Amino acid sequence: MKEMCRDENCPFRFFSPDPLEYDKEILPLEKTHPEDHYESLTSLCDRAADFLEAVIEPLAAEVPMDTQVLISGHGALNRALLMHMRGEHDMAAFWGTGLQANCGICIAEVVPDLQGTVQYKIAEESRIYYDPELLRNLKSLL
Image 1: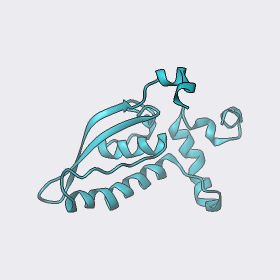
Image 2 (image 1 turned 45 degrees about the vertical axis):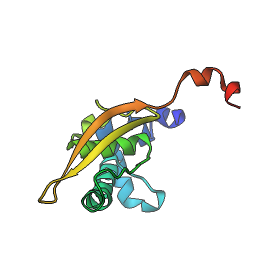
Image 3 (image 1 turned 90 degrees about the horizontal axis):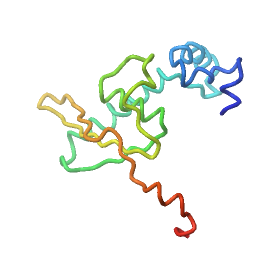
Image 4 (image 1 turned 90 degrees about the vertical axis):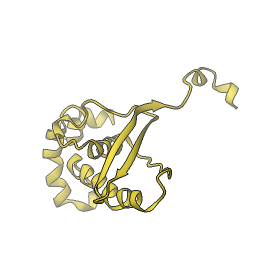
């Protein structure tokens, strides 16, 4: 990954520091080379929103309120899911505030109203459920 960030010809060099420039370079490749599986951050956000709207939101209206669902993904996908839940659309701020920490868990409540519209309530921004002290003494875990 470090090599891709240093390569002046690689669009990935913009992935973290400049999401808009990353999308500007990736969107044409995404369209002209679908076999290479390029994905812009815009498309990632669309895919995350489609998943929430097609799977999670209908589920909220069908299952008991105390049902829990675990969604696990990588950092960029998790960020895209949280952007949809918060109603954020500013791609320039994709890596801005409210990032989920590695190994972090965000707890969100999906609340449907009588009209079928869904509201998200993020109860926990990010918690890490591991003890970093365990990493200091890995032999004790074996």
